[in-house]
Image 1 (cartoon, rainbow, N blue to C red):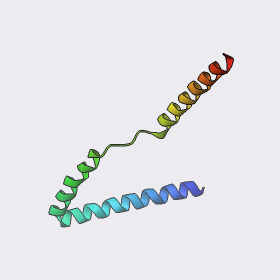
Image 2: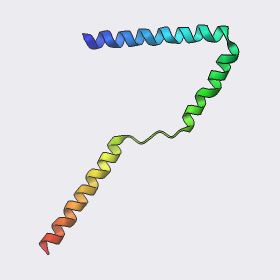
Image 3: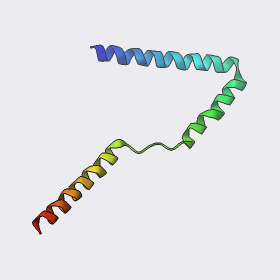
Image 4: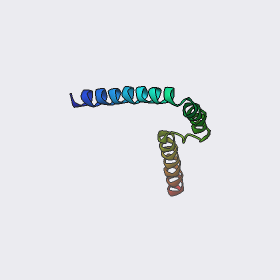
Length: 75
């Protein structure tokens, strides 16, 4: 029940803030154009890879290390 309330509250706050931004942009069109020009710059910065890929690589390396250690002990 608490999760539904929290999600609803976040949704309402999001809609309210978007409406405030639209109202602000209508009053200050130059600032709105400036904001629209700045937002695409965010996409220039690279997005780091998801951590689960790094974890999977680490697991594969650990398996290889265990196999290599096991081979050296047998000999």
